[in-house]
Amino acid sequence: MTTYVYGIAHADHPAPEKQVLGIGDPPRPVRIVRAGELAAVVSDCPDDLRPKRRDLLAHQHVLTETSSAGAVLPLRFGSLSADDEAVRDALGEHTEHYKTQLAELAGRVEYNVKAVHREEAVLRLVVDDEPEVRRLTESLQSAGGGSYPERVQLGELVANGVRAREVSDARTVERTLAPLAEQSAPGPEGSGWLVNLSFLLPRGETAPFTEAAHRLAETQPHLELLVNGPLPPYSFVRPAHSASDGQAGERSQEKSVG
Image 1 (cartoon, rainbow, N blue to C red):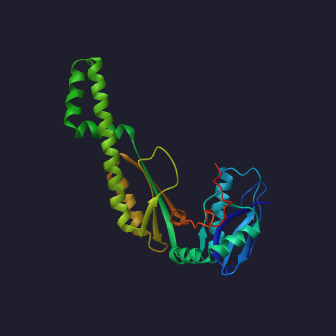
Image 2: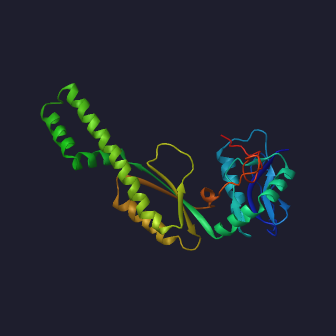
């Protein structure tokens, strides 16, 4: 049966004192597969695995439970291996890479920050800040709506103004938060966000970052700012490539489930 891999730890990482259940319906029991200096947190994988909310939360739960006993290098949802033996082979092949990653990310957490414009608020800002937009808006209002070409011109000016604000606001978010983190990286794939960044922070030193994010939301009310964390540092795990260019942790068997 295909093996689902949640994360990688040192070989002396203890098995959970109580049974931890992972993905699947019914949930599959979690176990530890050891090889040399490393171990992997795994379970059997159902044939119909999909990124459903239940399984996404189960993946997160397993990492939270198992990392309470020591550092676990988190793999993203959908990391698969042909079987336990393939997991052992991958751990042996990439031992030094994973040991380095475990040392680098020990005691670290990830915060993901997403931002999107509040549409009405940003439109008001564009009208207030762009003299040509303001002039044409007032002209069309006094003319009872104006001509079609004038309305098209206004629409283009507003769209350009909104795009400029997107660039400016994305820079503001990054400039404000990045200096308070050890690293930043693109967040998980998603669409519709003008900002989607993940930040790496020491687990016990997150207050300055979260406070700065809160202040940013207060001072930029046209931005809807979503801060999610602390999370396992998924975005900062570098893949290890095998001789056949396969993905880390799952040899060449890893696939993205989506």
